[in-house]
Image 1 (tube, rainbow, N blue to C red):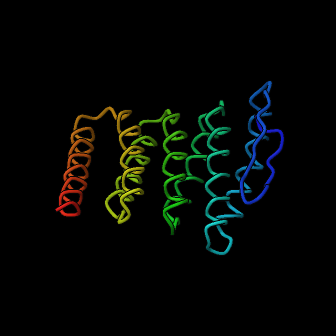
Image 2 (image 1 turned 135 degrees about the vertical axis):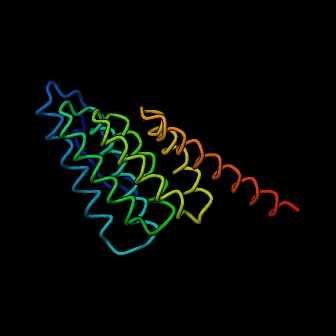
Image 3 (image 1 turned 90 degrees about the horizontal axis):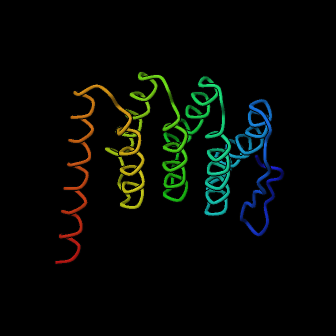
Length: 175
């Protein structure tokens, strides 16, 4: 799917190509995954965050094409760990979207539930409004795949509280 990933002036450029089979997709997912992990562990700063976020988006784009459920699960795990480690808003917003895109492809009910729980925990800890909005969107996408009634009710409650909190902050800010 990705022929080359090049860094130019601090931005990541990915050139898409068509992968013929699942083996090629899995192999093509390696470069953006390694780039994401390398840049996320690099020293902090806006350039490192932009690069890590770009690699995360590229990795998610390839990972959503993975055919094996175990490969999708591993990709979601890489992005979840990254989301939990994210220490600035730039990368957290990108990671929330990337994680949701991959987590939507999970097939096992327990894996979907774990993904929703991970996003819920991150959402409840979020301080930055942009990060909270990205996490709420990601959580809603993954929670839509839940099948247990109690889990769905819990997700609805979390999203309701998040909206109320956002509304309260907006009202307080604009008085």
